[in-house]
Image (cartoon, rainbow, N blue to C red; front, side, top):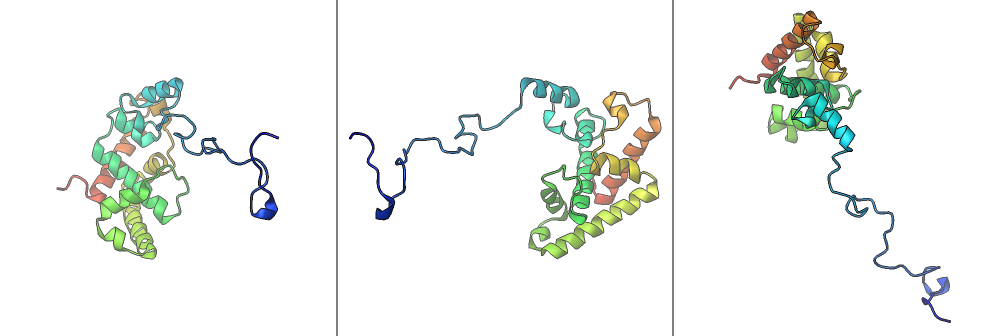
Length: 190
């Protein structure tokens, strides 16, 4: 009888055929599956991202990012909007978890002490900062527009049509709200 030697279970072996060292068993990594390390998406998806965000396709996933990629808002407004959403996610258990790096955004804003805080202190600090910014938006009368854009990540219909003149009041509310957030978070003060 030729073939692989089988060991019996009674002698401490495993039943069945012995394992081959080079066999692909349930490969879980891209490299193990023989695929590229970074998945850039299909050519159709890449074209769609370019259409949404121009030469900055990494910003195509959020409405705020699309405004930034098209040059309608600046870097400070973009950071302030992301920070507002990140604080909301931390304070109220991220109902729309669109931003995966929200903790890093907040720690960069708060500084080194963020890493030294306990989770309860972090929650309290994030809640205080979010509520302060939220009150400023309510006083400015633009909370709904900013909340929809930054937190709920709703794409305004005028952005989908790629025009800024159709709904001038909505556009002005968003710009005004982002300026309030920039001032509230202290971006551009140094």
